Length: 179
Image: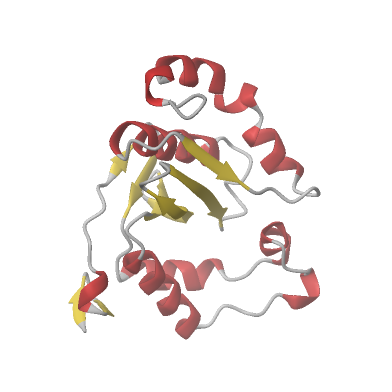
């Protein structure tokens, strides 16, 4: 075990993911301060439901769960805290990263109901996609969105993320027909 920014994690999982700054959003590794911030935001049923949990299945956030959450971010080499204007707001990560096939899936969770729907999630996604395509040399990122999560569906719409322009800039990073 090792102490990483005030949190005990297995030494084998330590990594230094780069901080990824944006205009209003910073993607960074978790810190000890994030335990209290995650605990303070709690488990709001209207937010947790968007992750596929029924409102009746939402459990209160405990200090132990918040510590486990921070350890999970630190132990994942492709996970970041989303910080908005200096305050903890959520998390974003790449899962199932496959360097051979150059693909991954993405997950995002905004936990602060006061900032949801204001474009911060979209900015975090753009930052993560830029990193995934340019720095990790991936060519495919998948995302699963629940049918009733209309806000996420709008966010993932090409108009919100401006994917056509992004893809045009990155067209040489994509593989077509196995090329």
